Amino acid sequence: MVALSYAEMIEEAILGLGEMLGSSRPAIWKAISAKHHDADYKQFVVRLKKMRDAGFLAQNKGKFRLEINYKHKLLKALEQGRTHASVVNKSGASKKKRVVSSKAKKSKKAGSSAAKKAKKQANK
Image (cartoon, rainbow, N blue to C red; front, side, top):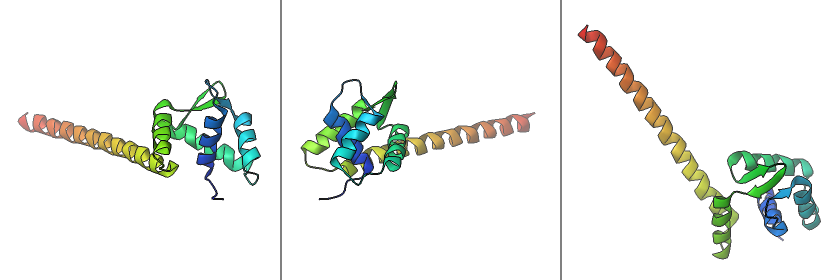
């Protein structure tokens, strides 16, 4: 059997539990440990937090659920036979592009305001 990453295990457990408002951390861990006996709880907790911080999971009152957009992308990819990695790579790349473009805009604005100030001082 191919070993899954903790992110894939978490996604599989949340989808398997199918709770509408989300699943608690102990419920997700119970589902993972029942299926994958060699899973480590500390690594599970770390990955759960990283997925929440990255925007793949939403947490509400101690319950975790897949983000709506990410869930739709994931289900669509799984129906087409693609893997979890293809969904993560596409969504991660688009986030990085947005960050770079917003930083570039800020630097352009800062540069143009400095140029305007220099022109005003030269005119005086």
